[in-house]
Amino acid sequence: MNIVETIGTAAVLEQLAEESAELAQAALKLARKMRGVNPTPKTEEDWEALIEEMADVQVCEEQLQLGTGARKIIKDTTQEKTQRWEARIKQGELKNHADDD
Image (tube, rainbow, N blue to C red; front, side, top):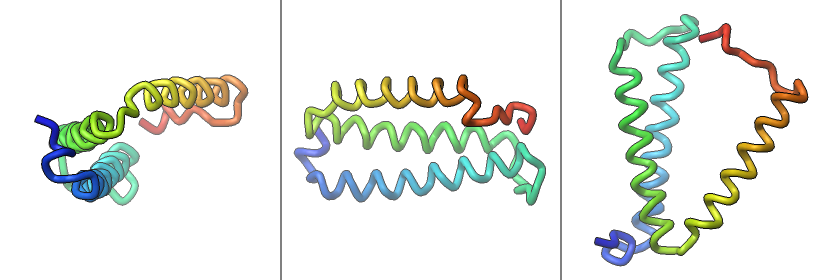
């Protein structure tokens, strides 16, 4: 089933925005928990919530990709952005905060 064709692009965009906001909140709560600064009382549910929100966003993205034919462009752009991020890390522009985990 092509959801975009059924409910329309605008509706899928609205869903993507909502799910993206929920993903951002889940990521922030998990980061607060990990850093121990202003922690949230949640426990192991943090990772589960993050994964569920990531899946929700991915479903919306996939539907938009099907509706727009942008799958290859997104894949290529993702590769380019990953390579730039890795290059900045290697060049020392970004500090590794692994010790914050």
